[in-house]
Length: 320
Image (cartoon, rainbow, N blue to C red):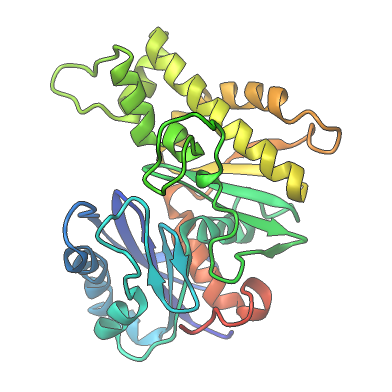
């Protein structure tokens, strides 16, 4: 699709971001708000439209030809609705209709945030030289998207590759998705901090118990903090190995806020992958940090709009 600018939206359990994105994947203007994830459905929608309103006031908005949304999932790209596990008020919520009420008749494309990140990293990031990749976001939740044979594979509803809800512990904790022992329930930033706190770790005085605080103590050798990240890494490795066994992968790209821990996460992740990825065709998987950082979802949502349904989306997903 020949577009000048795309308005991209990235919706997660912690923040909502929006940006004007050009044909090179450059963010020309952006806005961000916290996600009021524990409040009512309309308050969450207001955070989304609140990031778009300042962009609409930008004189460049008249050059926008489409809107791309990557949302925490599950999503249903066929109906334009979302039911994110980490936003309880949104269940079958008509997100596309809600956005259109603010932005007008521009075409809107909806997909899961993991797929948006995969599209971004394949277009302009760490997966751009790979035809078979799993791109992951490890943050408040854990999501993912698949590039297979050089093309994004979102599935009929836009959720394929959602690695966060693969069960890696059959007797593990119940997950808000309804499953048990999911990757997300172990490996997300929220659950890293939850487990570390329960195991006796405490943040510095006055600080919040976050994964970033756990990572800071892990760098200094705090045993519980290091164990929390090792546990997260094992869950991620088990999920990656299961995915690679099914579809065969060249590379795994890991982004999201927890990935900012750097080698505190990546070293035990690569070590654990040797334990779980044992078949000959999965042993050589490369694990790379995402290159686009927290902008990957925005770049990817724009990429899906720009490069069109025949490149990125299965029939019925474009133009919801």
